[in-house]
Image (cartoon, rainbow, N blue to C red; front, side, top):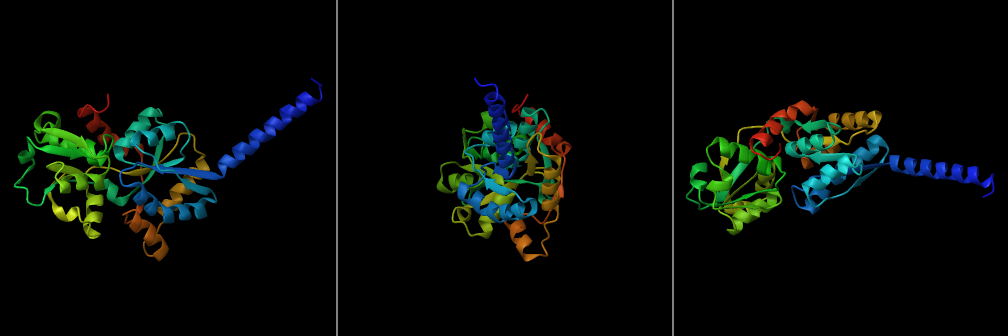
Length: 286
């Protein structure tokens, strides 16, 4: 090969590589655990995505996924820059990335989050103990509020889901759990309090067919987490953007309302140590 052509080709390759890197740096890739229907996740994110685009100057692209594990792998493989995670999913991401995934903000409500156990409206059950021998539905296996913490609190109450329930199903999402119970597919289930309240407020027909039997003690839950190695300046921009959302401003209040947040506050990995301990206690992680 001509000696002049070789360095020219090498230079061209470097330029193409730089161009690809630049193109990638103009996009913020966002995803979320699929704890609700995909259409609902997209609806909730649209105004927030537009706001983050304005705040960062980046093209914000939301990519829905089919399961919780896909979000963890997306963060670990640098295919997702920012993700909405439950507390347990964050713990899984932290372990998967050797501490590289960093939680930046959470809703104020996530400091004291709860789950609701539900039964059909005409169920004779009066306490969790009455659920023994029943068919029961959790949400997704990796859900903090739809599986891990309810399982943890059931076991503390002397109920082993694997032996005390007649059968255990996983609905895949909180709204799906309500549908399971409402339709009689199972005799009881559990979902997070935020989705339950939203379904009640919107007069969801399935919610009208069930009632709350019990509520768990509070625990830390959801957060927004950035992938390992995300640019520090961008991480700070994202953090600041969430923290300055002000409910006194109508456009920002719309974003907060869709996220079911009074405001966002800074968070840190150690806030989820209790979740990790509960997961180990329940045998869901080693």
